[in-house]
Image (cartoon, rainbow, N blue to C red; front, side):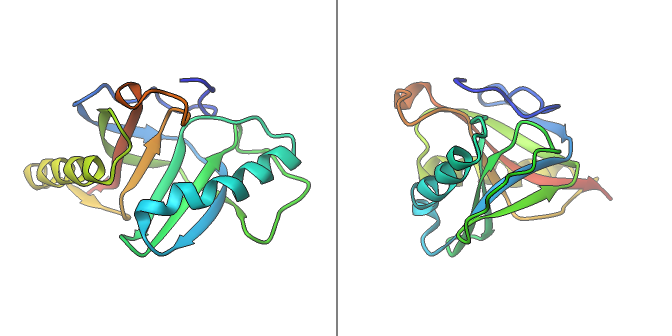
Amino acid sequence: MSASLPQGFPQPTDTNVIEVKEYPQYRAVTYTHTGDSRMATRAAFNPLYQHISSNQIAMTTPVEARYVKEGKQTEVSFLYSTPDMTPQKIDSRVMVRDTSPMMVVSIGIQGAYSWESYEQNLQKLKEWLAQHPEYEVVSPPRRLLYNSPMTPEDLKRSEVQIEIRLK
């Protein structure tokens, strides 16, 4: 990882491991992309980068992509290092939002950030959930992307996650 994790974030899940993790409250700047979810992170990069640059906010890892309406609406976020950071300027193309603490089931991935990889690993999480009826899904899936575009494809790390709670 080339940047630090937000305060209190757990380490990335190991490759091909499925685990339940807890995340603290965090603050992020978010761009909502309407259209093909495969293009969301690319479309979001410039508005998000301009926001952190104009507010002199350090880049953290991971970048978060929430698939609100899979294939049609995606929220892409750059996470702030602490939940109390307050930007001075907010462009109309982005919004700052707080996310409450959450529990997720997560699978660690190494390799290209392809849509096929996302779908295959999401299916593995759904199969895991079918075998663990003590949990219920709380919200749509998300993806955490840990590396810069300059990282070789085969070395990139990511996670697919589904927010859950005990029934």
